[in-house]
Every structure is written in C-alpha cells, then in structure tokens.
Amino acid sequence: MRFRRALVALSLLGLGVTAGCGGGSASPSSVITPPAPSTAALNLSLRDMPPAGTNILAFSVTMTGAVMQPGDVSVLNAPMTMEMTQLQSMAAYLDTVNVPAGNYTGMTVTFSNPRMTFLNDSGGMMMNFNCGTGQICEITPPMTSVSATISGAPFPFSVPSGTPLGVLMDFDLMDSMESNMSVSPMMSSYLEQPTQGSGTNGAMFSEMQDMIGVVNSVDAGNQSLTVQFAQGAPMLTVMTGGTTVFEGFDSIGKPNSFSSLAQGQIVEMTMQIEGTGTLQASRVQLESGSGQELYGMVVAEDATTGRCDVVVMDEAPALSGVNIGDEIQVNVQAGAQFGMDNWGMDTSGMNFAGISDLMPGQIVGFTPLSGLTSGTPPQVNVNQMRLMSTWVTGTISQALGSTDFMLTPASGIFSAPGTSSLHIVTSSGTAFDGVTGMSGLGAGNTVSLRGPLFPNRGNPMFFATYLLKR
Image: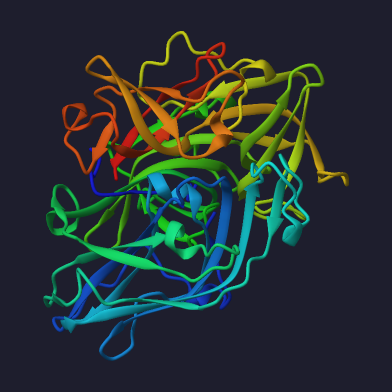
C-alpha cells in the first residue's frame, strides 16, 4: 500500500542525503529500542516546496540540528546533507528518536553549506555569478540566516507517552530564496498519525520509494540487511519478509529472492516506516551487482555524438571529484545497454533504447567505466544507462478524459523543442496525496509529480506514480 501523506526517498532519492560528521556512533539506527513509559518514538521526515518560476536544478544544504521547545529536545542525531529539489514529490526520512512525553511549542532547525545549480534563462549575463544566458551554473549562495523557527501549526502539540508520532517538515525553497540569490531558510511542519496495518503494534508511517543504496551486510537469520543509502541516511537496518518482492537479480543469473542479496550490491528499495522506526521493505530491486552508480538529471543530449550532459543528483557510493549538483558530460559507448525501472504502470509504446530517447528533465542512472576525466564539463564513459523516476511541479492546463491531463511545468528545463507542456498519465497505480483522485483536480491546480518521463517523438509523456496537490 502507499501512504498518502508522504513518500520518502533517501533518491533520497533521496534523493542526495549524506551522513554528516560525527562517525558511525552518532548515526541513528532503523531499529529503535522500545520507548520507556515516559517517552515516545518520534519519526522525523522532510519535503520541499519548489520555487515557482525559477530553474533551480539542484539545491543542497546541510541540516546541522533540530530541537523542539521547551527543553531543547534534539530530534536529529547527526548532521545530514540533503538535495532539496527532488523532495517536491517525496519526503526524506531523517531520524527516529525517543523524546520525553509532554507538550511542545515549537522547533528550531539549523543549516549550513548551501550549494545551488541553476539554468540561466534570464536572456542575459548574470554578472554577479559570471553565468551566461542558457548556461548551467553552480554557486555557493550566502546565508542571511542559519536557522528556521517553526512556531505555528501543528505547534503546540502533545506527545503522549508510548504513542509513536511523526513530524513532516516542509522546507520552503520558494520563500527561502532572496531576490539576490541569498538564502534565509523558511519552514513549516505537519503531524503524521500512524495508520493501522501489519507494522509494530499495528502502527505504520510513511512509505519510502526510490531509496538507492549499497548493501553493507546481510543477516539471513533475521532476513534483514544493512544499507548505506545514496540519498544519505546513515547506515540503516532494513527488514524483509514473506511479502517482500525481489526484482532484477535474474539479470546476474540468480533467483529473485533474499538469498541473492550480497555485500556491495546497489539496490533500489520501497519500504515503510513502522511506528517505532523499524524499516520494512516491500520491494528490493537490484540496480548493479557491484561497483559505482551515478544518478542525474539530463540537461542536454546529442544523439549524433552519443553523449548527454547531466546534473548529478545521487552517487552510490561517492565518486571522487563529483559532488551533488555538479554538471558532467556522459559519453555513451557504442553498444551500450539501456533499460527502465519497473514502476507498476503500463508504459507500453514508450521507448528507452538509445540516446535519441533522452530529453531534458529525465533522471537516469549509469555506471562509469572509470574515474572522472577532466574537461568542461568533466566527463565519464558509460556502457549502460537506466531510466529512473523524475519529478516535476507545474500547473494543470487542460484535462484529457478521466485519467490524463496537460501540465505546464514551472521549470523550463522540461521544454522539448516545440513544446511547453507535458502529457500526464495517471492510473490505478498512482498514489494521490492531498486529493482522492482525478475527480478532485482541474485546470489551474498546482501539482507535484513523480514518475518516468518519455520524449515520445516530441510529445513528452509523464507517467505519474505519485501526485501531490499543492
């Protein structure tokens, strides 16, 4: 099942989120000691309100701390660096901590080290950043404030003893950006109540999709594995069970089962946060048997030369010389293999078989054949590429029957030659958030979407696995 309040990615995706300083001893675990009678488990997650009318392609920042008042009760065990733009259509799981039961009146979150990548579509040179028109540029924006205080709804609220609770924070990138590109963090938050199901004590929180990471260890006795997620949560323990679906292991000649898991594999997972912070996987898909995977947003492609330019959104594990938000050139070798994720939607008629099936705005995963080669931009050579879920926010311009509609994206990066809109397809496999279904949507509504994007011979089609009504 899909939890309708939030999808969590650590693409994120996730998403990228990387463990901060402090070593392994400071990292939270996905298996939390049951709370004492005077405490309760609090699950903390984060999503983003995308900036309107701008072409910010990547924005990363380090969350250095989060405390609730009164008492400066910490709800973040270690600093984490997050890429915010992909959180417009998912939420990132941050931590599960046991907090004292009682009344809380607000929260203060502190930040550092912002980095931003954007497309200059202003029509002229941005002199302050030496960024020419049409260029992809990276900057380190100044911070006019290093903290954000949340004092409005849902605060004040009460944490009952022994009852798990979730706090979903919303980083408002739109209001956090000043006109001179400086950053003054603005945030809000929401309470998440657990749903009833098969989780611990019947309590389950958010479902997390597109979580990509490297398997660190496998425990056959407990049917669990520890994973260092590319999106950056600390090392987490993930439980599997009889209903967990395993996919992609047959590509390396092994059965699609728990027995095929091994240290060093790169996997993509769907899982759910249970009430006490335990992570339960419903799906495990093999991305690579071993080695290095990069994930990025396509910003340019050239089928005649067999290359594309991408802005890096994730690394599994980190590649020397590459940071989240960097633009790199990907040289696709002759005979390269192309493939697609399994989204549980009917994408028949759509192709992803070569460079000609790429378009700006897509998210792709690829395996470098070697390290980074110097250049402007730096380059990597690859012999395989995989289409992943991308994200987009925009305004519905026209309904197309009962399941489809046309969307005008807020970002110009999605504009294919001769087009200014995307054809959005929903189905029974779409998770709706903030609205029960297509009947609650109409022209003029703003929505954030997640799913695969296909150029479709100049008529781009986006298959929505998740839809959030803004």
